[in-house]
Amino acid sequence: MNRTAPRLVEAVISRGPFVRFAWGVSMGDRLDHHPNAPADQDRGEATRFDPDGAFLRVERQTLSGFPDAGGALFTIRPFTYPLREAVGGSGYARQLAAALRSMTPAQVQYKGLSVIGADLLTWLDQQA
Image (cartoon, rainbow, N blue to C red):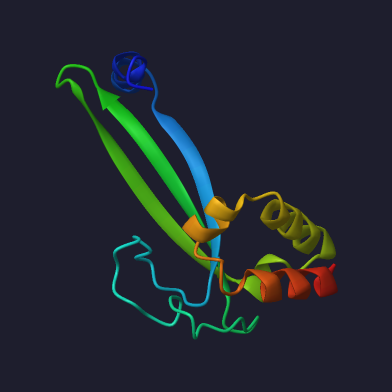
């Protein structure tokens, strides 16, 4: 990675803009999901999965280069949708469950799904 970093930075600055989407499931609609954010109903061992209080979180992330300035701007626009509405059709529940099952333990941890993951999968399977 260190060897390719200069080429990656150059690509970010001189090409693009780049757009990607990231997603997650949370037990609240709070927009700040930085790993160092203060604790809330979405974090901690006492967190329980409740489909009526769960949200699908989607982030639109952009990376735009400014060659003349030799830099780039990274933006995040978060959206939250009630989970019941987001998986309203069984196809969406099936797809979300498949995505969750494809994650490594490290990804599950990173997404904050270690505590609610099993109950979330059970619920998604019932919706499908």
